[in-house]
Image (cartoon, rainbow, N blue to C red; front, side, top):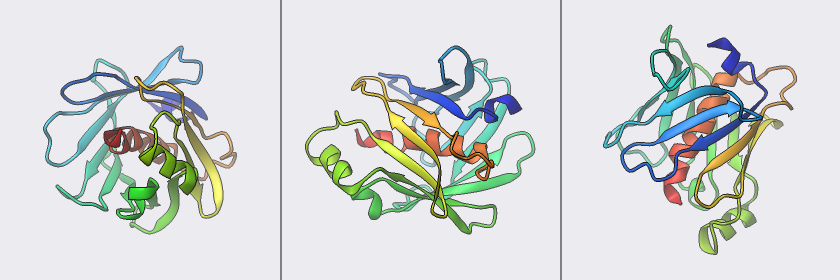
Length: 193
């Protein structure tokens, strides 16, 4: 489903009160069309996430797999579900993420090419120690260039993000890696809240 990865803006919504496993839906910016669907399996020791083209789960488009069972600085390989081709990976910056969520974007050969990080240390500390009612904001960078951002909408009950890749005018970031980052932020970082 190539059109799902040609969008420059998305709306990502995680289902609230999902007791076993999680569900994430990525829509067009105006929320009129479902583009991608994730049904996370419950009770998995090692994350193995499949991204589908819709809720029927008949067409997998991406696979996101953790490299280890328990790893504070976990790396997650992102691959094309149809071909099995590794697109890259995201690696959580373990201790650095305690105070401010921070990830590295890795290319196919695991060379760091970019970062995904929470907006500022001050805001991150406020969120962690005073209130989680302050919406999160993440910047996606390749080198020093911002190619995307995620803004959590103010809704304390339903984790949702407005995702914007429109500043990546030359399509430097494989949108599939960008979507993988959105999903991992909602699943992995979402457990902190």
